[in-house]
Length: 178
Length: 177
Image 1 (cartoon, rainbow over the protein chains, first blue to last red):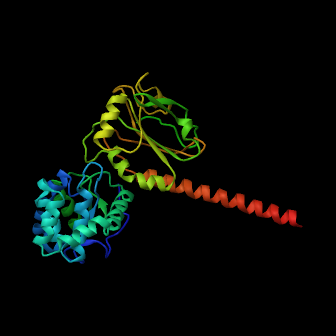
Image 2 (spheres, rainbow over the protein chains, first blue to last red):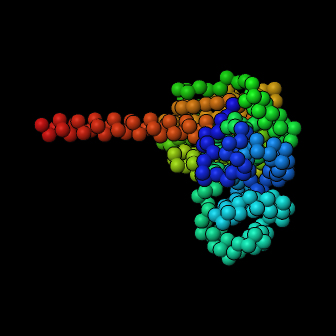
Image 3 (cartoon, helix red, strand yellow):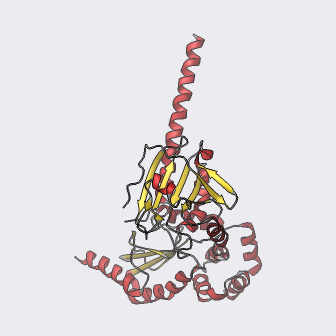
């Protein structure tokens, strides 16, 4: 069974409480339709488990088959540098059907960020290193496609259906209670 | 699962079609680490596809000076279409005629289905198997094992170099006396 090789750290985008008993970590690609489908499921899990769950997202763009995945990941990082990571993350997944540079620039403006600044950041690859380091950490942890989830550092081998992920979470909670 | 060639074995040389009018021989790749990735078929579902993943990990393989080639029983035109569709930047070899003959010499052929196993080999500079792994056919083995093998190989090579250097230093001091 694959384990997470790079533990959650301060370079990560983390939603929820550091003391939460469960950490759900996803390696995802903004252009991957399966990641798009998993997005509302993750949101439902967050609602369902409240402060028991901490969620972390790392980039795993498959850039050769998804031409906009890299730009989308860098855009999320750009927004993150302005403390808008999760807002951008949601906007990108919710508008996955029309993902592209115009949509990303529009999203930046919608969040009160400078589209011109984003364009420059994409051109210079300002955030490419962060995206690549997420990707490489995923490869080292045995990530072989997207989305790949880790629950408390253990790779989730089931599907990304709500029931499967919830079951993995419940069993960790039970282990803790025992 | 198949009994694939193990570390220490010499990889049998082969010559296979790499494009409709070009061949590639294993011995042409001597002198650097080679990753041989046998896989069952082109056109498996896209987001979890093994060759697509290796395409993304390519820069990491290249850091070790390694070459990667994919091998399946698909024909050259099938490979060409598949590689173009997924923008693959490494060669795919056609173990097409006689079907699966090369895979068989590596112990990586599934006779019942008539396809290659999902088997990975990392060969050293001299064409010897340094690491091998056979994955369950439906499971994409990822790239972690390959990278670990390449790192070990690089480390080993570094040690040999150091040994050679210290020997030549000894020789120098010897002749100086």
